[in-house]
Length: 447
Image (tube, rainbow, N blue to C red; front, side):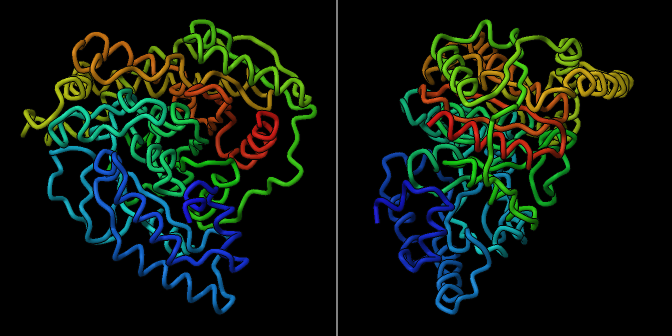
């Protein structure tokens, strides 16, 4: 059974379909593994064994009668603690929401449950999702208490804000994790823990019942062991068809590398990116290096677009109890007060024009390529000791991924084979099917 813990979600589903894996036994194996894991309390905010086993029993019944609801029926996964789940605390990693217990599941969890997926529990995250490092000392009172470990070094941050979603998958205590991505919060932890992470286009998946950060940028996405898993989880949460990944190829694919965003990458990130480009080229991809002028002025708009909206949503709650927050996250929210309503409206008008410029400039390419992050996972102790280092590393961590959010794109990060170094592919809005096919072909080239 221990082998089950490291299989892809789709392979587990195929095992259930073949009668080789029993859903209740599978779910119990994950619950047992999570319960005895040395970092259980740093990964999960809560396990939900009663729900998980009831869902697994229902899945087992369907399997016995040949009426499975899909390939992932009976597969156990985790959920970031900003997805409402009925009767279970959903506090978004913040003491500001302490004791918040929703009455109903959020839309994407409800759809996933209807598809037969098993909910193992809720995972830790950056406070209110407004940090890319995954460090959360305020929620449980110690730096490590709500800061999941990095799979390569527990003394380093895992990336955020979907930190526990990544850790649950990377440490084998969930078959996959569901997270959210506003500025990189799926792709960063996926990259730093050698996972595949899908950033969906804003508006593709429902945000109903999801605790917001900045609703115009918030997106839902899976962190998985394979591109195939991402494709199936997208379909489950959307209630739609599974993207066709068969016969995916890089032959004739045309990619643009944003050279400016790769030039200053840390040594291991640069090595992983260079290796990935070499393998993609060997598989038949055409790769060019260049720059898209629209991105520089768009990046300059980040403070007003992200912070102003986030503070507008959370200002009253923050100012009612500011002492409950990690000061560096609180200060980042408060940065939104520096901008007026006219500033915010003008910034969005400008960004919409820049998105059109980006689309025109990149239309000839199948995807844009960047290192997922320019930096390696920093140490928890140094981040706690040095506020300036924390701020600089948080901004650098999210710099590359934020390109996709600003331009409203779909995005995918893949492991390169170099630890904590991801390859990011960005495609047009609502082009997840195309992106996943490219990702499947790239995954094959890299393994």
